[in-house]
Image 1 (cartoon, rainbow, N blue to C red):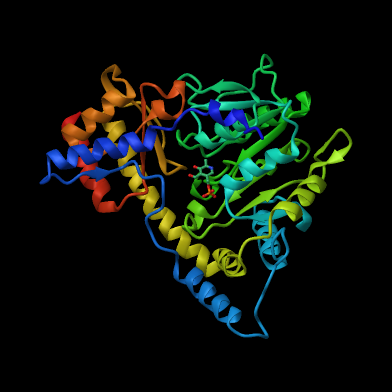
Image 2: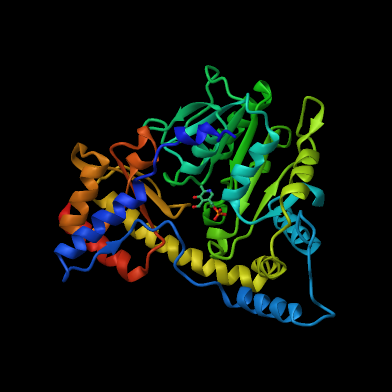
Length: 392
Ligand code: PLP
């Protein structure tokens, strides 16, 4: 028996454990100081009343023999797939019901989807990046190239014919940079992928944070995307489902490689390796999309985005270059005074008692940058921003 030795090539992720250790050490040395966390990547608000009511109702159904549900369809219940079809249709995106797959979240499907793609494919991954894209490819021993984000391209790398990619990762709105591609920029990627016969894995986990009209929420708002892209999305940040677990993946029928539909392979993969998302969770997910619930989740998103705007306004006032904070809960800033990411982390913690996330932890292009988020409370955000304004 041999292990998959690719796992030995994974770099240990020290980012969040080092942050936690440094914060603990600081608290132990300064017990009277309130530490203000602006590095949170998880939601902090509870599920909304409509979602909770739907969950309770579905739980009661599970208690009666007539309404009890056992195994459900692997691809998700019809009621939720129909709801998502209608959600996309409001944006002018027509999907067939059979193209929508319910998942237990985006992270799982970003790993699982690679099951149906050959390991000979080369992956093109942005840098800086949400770390899971990278690690799932290392686990399979794939060749990886990087699309470099930097200040000049606003952390929105554009396609380049020098890339030799088969699988392209795009996340918009982006974690960690908060940058959002506009339609023209996304169209350039779609045209490039179609030309190269490559596949785009589009991460739409933060689409609900876009408020500016005209920015694309889905890659299928771009002509030509149905022949080159799958879309993976999630209710984690949209509706506070990080602990409840529900997402969705769209695989259009036009995606054919070597004469085989990816959709058919994905159905085969899912029905073999997955037994679906719990009924109660799918009913809760369905409830996210009612009109009343959209107002409730909209209010939560508006709360996080108000925090993000407060942070962004302070940075603008201090003339600190940053992306995000407008259509994304993430703010990505250039460390002032040419500081390196970890240097700025220590500086901010010691002098403003504020915790953020060093950009260097998201890739080599993140060095010298720093991530703050709007997921904290309004009170903490205001205090932290007050301290930052005094310090810088
Ligand atoms: N994609 C991005 C860019 C994320 O930031 C996250 C979570 O932080 C995910 C996917 C994972 O989402 P899920 O909770 O649905 O697995």
